[in-house]
Amino acid sequence: MERLSLIGEAPRSNLVGEAAGCVVGSFKPVSLFCMNNMRILIADDVNHNMMVMSERLSRINSLWSVVQYENAEDAVSAAKKNKSHLIVMEEQFGPGKMTGTEAIQALRADEEANCQTRSVIVSWTAILMELPPGADFTWPKDANATIMQEAIDRALATVGH
Image (cartoon, rainbow, N blue to C red; front, side):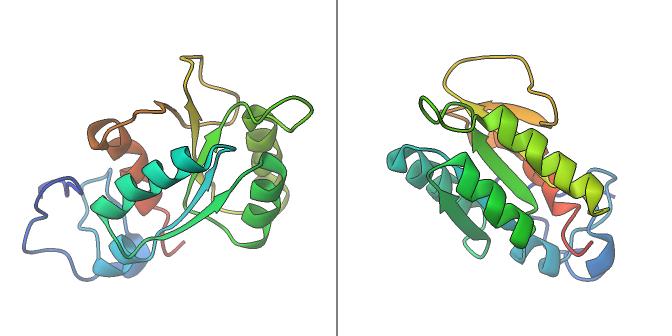
């Protein structure tokens, strides 16, 4: 079975069904339910950065639900209330503010305490750095669709779970 690529044209068959098993990385077909029901949270203190990332994601699938937060505290609070499949978290929010790394650790602790499926978390930064504890990926601010593909595939696999 071929791997579904969200970048470019999707295969015309094997898109419907298996809504509960929306596995992409294991080469199972992805249902339209999974492709259209992903929830994404973006946190960055620069509105322009959030707008650009939202636009990149909506070019892949305009039906995804994307919410934006200008600080880590609000992002963590929102993510605890409404589970997101993909979280794109800026690292630096300014002096005296919670960092992206602290936010990621708070989100992972909450997932573990409540036995929740893990969100796919991306550390999104202008400065190349090591993968922060709890993050699944690191993206540069100018991440393109190719760089984003693996994280999106993994996040799609959690839809419906």
